[in-house]
Amino acid sequence: MATYKTVALVLRRIPLGEKDKIVTLFSRDLGKLRAVAKGSRKPTSKLSGASEPLLLLRASLAEGSSLDVLSEAEVREAFPKLKSDYGRFLRATYACELLEKVMEERDPHPESFDLLLSTLYILQHAVQADTALHAFELQLLAQIGYEPQLSACIRCDNPFDTDYPPVGYSPSRGGALCIPCTEFLHGEAMPCNATTILLLERLTQLTDAKALAGLELPDEALTEINRILRAHLRYRIEREIKSLGMLDALRLEQQTIARNP
Ligand SMILES: [Zn+2]
Image (cartoon, rainbow, N blue to C red):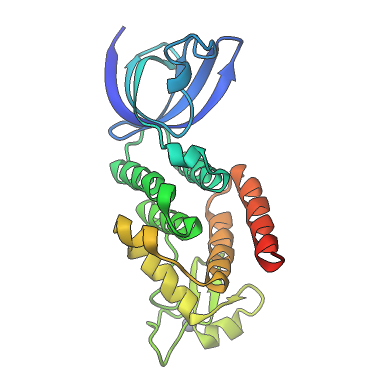
């Protein structure tokens, strides 16, 4: 049986029978792959602690007839600060699930691996976790060719500037709209502020980890960014993202606490 080693992030695991798990890994050089971690549901197994989500592994795998087998795994990073903070944990879980949903199996995307890894580090200490998460969403969308069009109107293609600002967003077309086009498409256009479109552009380009971790945006801008990105993603990713429901509930709870301390 051929064996191979790879560096991978654990995106997900599901139980398989009483003793095993199926893990979904995202390998830097091989892309998304699923493997059986035999015996890993037993607490005494060496693989038990190394086959959970949000771990960076140096993994040894053996080729199998249907699924490959995770034979050995050395944990390189466990992201402890993501696991001790429920809000950060949910955001990291969502980032992994989004990536899992948009990637095909065995289709390597090293740039997306680097993006997710750096996002997990940033999420551990970001001043505003949602800002870092939205930068991840935008940059991942850009890597797979689904990024929003933000610098020129998606309908008439005229470039935006201070005299010709974006005032709307079309989720179905996937981009910002000028004033006449927002009026023309009033049924499908979401009204938005020009500054929100500028912030979306900035988050798409901002890759400096320190700057991203320290970036704090006003609550209203963050709410609008979330609304636009959510609608944009709904048109491009047809599969349900389960962790989003929990994340929404948490955001709502945090907003309610902020309003009624
Ligand atoms: Zn236009």
